[in-house]
Image 1: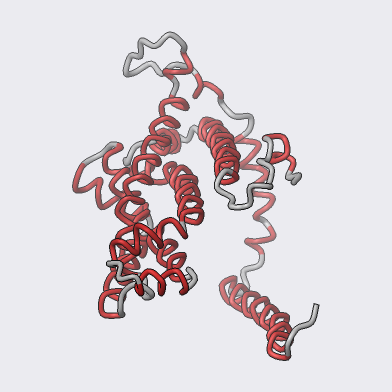
Image 2: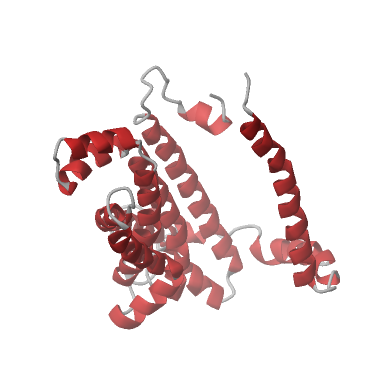
Length: 294
């Protein structure tokens, strides 16, 4: 395969750029350490002591029925803090992802510079940028103050962050579309709404669905964080156990959350495979996905 001179020149610049990034990263890291290398040297020993004295073995009582409030379900695990927290986290992530997608897509089309001029696109870009500037944890604190403790504040917090984060991914996808279909649609006299519904969304559907699934995975992970400030989910139980220094129960909940996230990730890979344009590609089996075999 032959490359032109400009391509070869760009390829020669990549190693230089990578070396600059590595050297700069090391320089900044040394500046942050500020000569206190003893703290890093002792960190592994401190981690080992904390792990074996406080975290391990996990306390699997989190899978037993909680004593209060009373639960009348048939199986104890359905009344356990782990199950109740995980289910609530999944509900928060699902609702916030759905609402975020519904609101982010119209905003993303307005922020796309290949659909609108800068006087319209830039203000909506700034709006989306502002919404994702604050992390979901800060949004959660804000809505806990406004709405109160519970999953509703968690849904609102993650919805706002999802709109900002997903909106950026979406307008970048839209701007990456080929100009030919858009020019053809404009030549046919289609309105902006018709161009979006008939050209933009169908052409970028694969990427939009992939981004939606990714955002759901992201929100499940962060659902454990916002619960620490009282926004519901498994984070509420993690926060409670941390206050009472029950680190072994925290470890058990983190293990449960890890396996839930892994299962969601595998299901997400499976779901994405159904939207690949090449129909000759085989859908990966669960075993192949776990082993990383194509």
